[in-house]
Amino acid sequence: QVQLVESGGGLVQSGGSLRLSCAASGSISIIYVMGWYRQAPGKQRESVTTISIDGSTNYADSVKGRFTISRDNAKNTVYLQMNSLKPEDTAVYYCTARVRTGPGERAYWGQGTQVTVSS
Image (cartoon, rainbow, N blue to C red):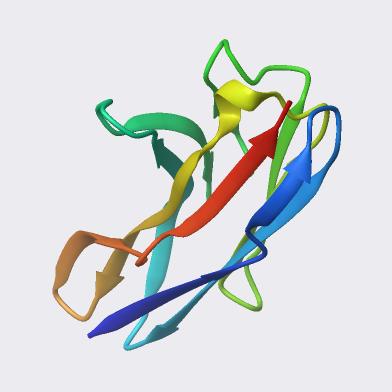
């Protein structure tokens, strides 16, 4: 079993910054992809950004130039640096990881951390 634990959410004013962290633990052989999704009230969960084991990244157009994802493979941890935050970034942010454990491979999700940006 694999657990993902997020931290770093909170309340920030528009234009401010926050840094989210997500640490994976458990029976991990390889973490292929790590990433962040978010879900705002009344909206579907959407992909924010992902990072592969080789360091290649993808970003949603809405966060390009403002958010930066990084990972520490030795610590099985992914980070999300969020700058120039806007009220529309308010959401619950979920960490996800595609993990190989023994012979199996699947996606795991964290419990989510609230990010609130006030105008």
